[in-house]
Length: 98
Image (cartoon, rainbow, N blue to C red; front, side):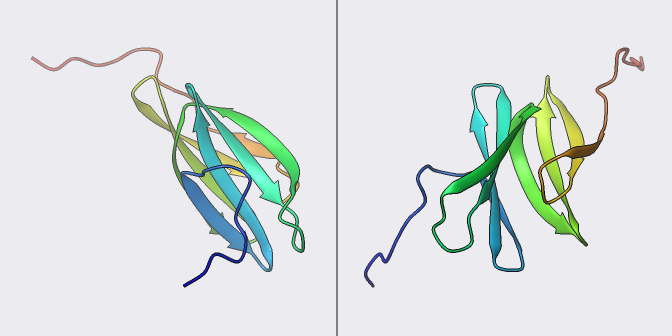
């Protein structure tokens, strides 16, 4: 097999919307979601989310990004323009059972 082309950076998660590729990568303690061009695979848009990248899924016309923020999973719903439609919060208190 020969490499035909490749992305400009490494990624931790990926999902397709039609012919368009969306990826997530961890940068420090944040996730950068990237929207890649259909023909050139140049980055067209980015969005930064709190937490390290766990997964990226297509959900109908939107995307669900799951990150790990302070040891807690967070859920982020983004549209194809990478605008955030919803973000879950992290717990401010913890219940300790004894």
